[in-house]
Amino acid sequence: MRKIILLILCMALIIVSGCASQIASRATPSGEQHGAEVMEWLDFSDRENMPWNDTLELEVPEFPNIVFTWRWDSITATDHNGEFVLFQGVPISQVFLADITGDGLPDFVATVSVGSGIVDNRVLVYDFVNNELYELSNRAVYNYSLLMDNGNLFVLQTPSSGAPWNGVPENSQKGELEIIDGKLAMINH
Image (cartoon, rainbow, N blue to C red; front, side):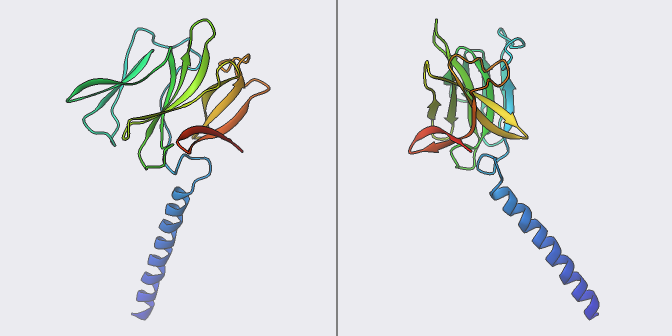
């Protein structure tokens, strides 16, 4: 009887330690945004396949009874009060969901183009819960776009003369997005 109890206790200990290591690895993952899984909603970085006349809708389990809609120039949310604009761009070519703010809920992370004549690309992070919009831009100096690499979301900084849609230019830098002192920043590693 003692052997059976000892065997059961050993098996329970192995199971508990395995679960604890999985929880620990999820809490401090390498390269992931605050341990949350990154979800790609859309990526038209090549822009050739962008459905300019269509809309794409998304429902997010963390935000029940809300429908998010992508149009080439805006992201909106519709609930029982109606539709409201989260952010705009011309166009919005990439949208991912990742926890950049660290509150455990997904934020909308997007590459948008802004301007007429001279157009720059920037990255926006929209914190839906707090209705906060963060922007990473440096007009006429750098362009910014998003890059998925092995399931992790990164930001790519390229000189404004570089074309981020044609691969990775020579003088580019890759980093992670973080909110520091209320501002969106790129952290190089």
